[in-house]
Length: 341
Image 1 (cartoon, helix red, strand yellow):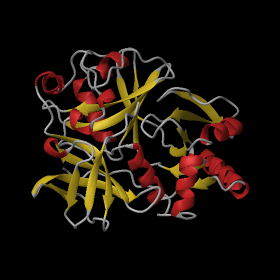
Image 2 (cartoon, rainbow, N blue to C red):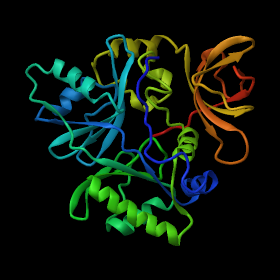
Image 3 (tube, one colour):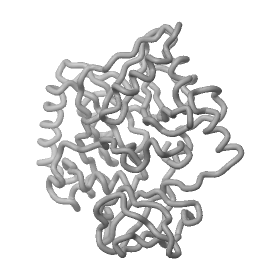
Image 4 (cartoon, rainbow, N blue to C red):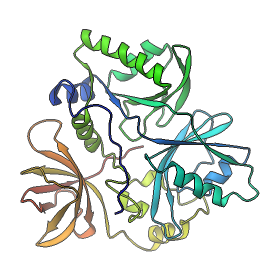
């Protein structure tokens, strides 16, 4: 896999301690700063039809306030980027992995011929993600409006008189919300959250370690780390990111042929690990003495001892319950990836 930037976080490895941060994510409300992402805006009356011909997901049914998730693929069907697509009244907003905005913009513009579409970079903004069963209620109380109800649903908001966007995350479980805000508004909202933390221990800022544990447990694979330009969409296991009835897009023939006539040689799986923490990643996995894939993400388990991970596992070894050997001597037990949306 080529070296692409993943999603480094602003916070330190830990804020108040791993256990307290995981507790807030699972039972309260944790705040994660995930500002690193590239965003593009598509405007023009052909924007929806045009983008639908570029991505694996079906955009035709998107109404303003709704969204979805899918892939940009090459002519050979390999993944060039993943993206969340948010539909607004007069434009589409693409949220992309950091560092890929310029390449995706160039790709899109290459295919604009007579289409009435304009692609521009979005205004800079910070992303604050609130996760946990108390996240929705806290945000409703702070913002004075109901939470977006469906995966990838979103709405306009104002924080301190500045516009922003409130999105229900579709890949971090059902209780995760992101706010895209002007930097001043993000600072203000974070300050109010920290004041609330002082009154309620179930509200906590979350560092990298606890967030990675939660991300892996939720089955949220990451472009540039868990999958990338060497992979076909089906190898991610994110079935809902690919439509087989929408018609043509770049790479569609290869993706459809694999779906209807073939089978993947391997797929991402969640893993439960015992033994020392592997480093560096990716770490090779073995089954019956032969190489069987690689561990691509790892973090402490959210509860109890051990580790959790995501890895690419060959078909012969990817059934749940299969025990794999890790290159450093540990053991990894294969688990299903949860359905995301």
